[in-house]
Image 1 (cartoon, rainbow, N blue to C red):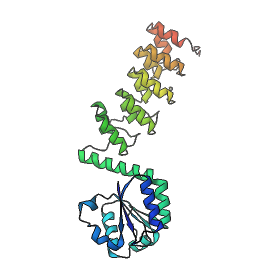
Image 2 (cartoon, rainbow, N blue to C red):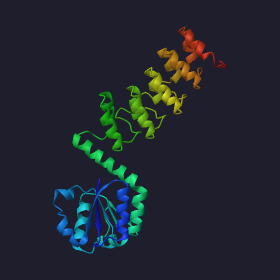
Image 3 (cartoon, rainbow, N blue to C red):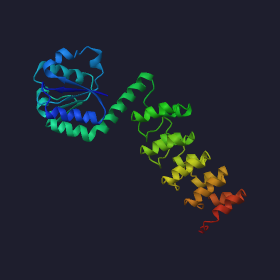
Image 4 (cartoon, one colour):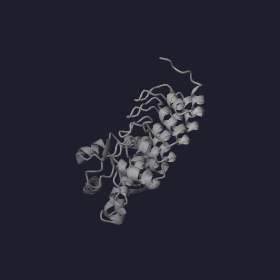
Length: 299
């Protein structure tokens, strides 16, 4: 970020308070005094193009022609502008990128309280533009492709640019299931930290992320999801419970984890069979022994 601070000829306390906020946040900025503005800044120069934000540290300033020119320039590039209500009335304040507050003092307070949000919003927009320049569609399908190709840096950019962590691919797979199906624990943790729905259900199999991890025989990722309160009682589209999946895979360690975490060994699938029943049918004595810790339900 680089900020342009428009100041009166003699910087007052109001302008100084804005400068202090920028200094506290270690932001690159330039103070433009209106008495010699036309001499110091050329709107066609490369230097002018580097400014990403503009704040008017005086009240009012837009009554002169050069200020109006500045406002038009920043409005044209959709760059955030912070100004007073008095200034906005003169400017007609029609642009959504203009933030209007009552006074310069309120501008200063707003910047201090919201600077992290402003910075994050800028980073998001810059990353979106970077993806656009790279020709990468801003979509869940791009995230899935990059996961499969192990282009995790692009995955991070998609998330940083604001890709919805609960979005679905064109095949109906949510991002958390994409990570689960590709054994990407770090991406899974990242999505969870960003607020992904831990129990989101895919539209293709009707699996939750934890069901996908069990299907993949990935104990570590299964445990991470259970530790984050994954629901172990969801039935898949074809009527299978998570323990039926685990018994089918024959993974003793995962079966033990699921039983210890409260998965029901006696819930029946669409065929009328339970996980306990399958373990007995196929003589998987080690799995039968694990499920024996849970008293068998009788009808």
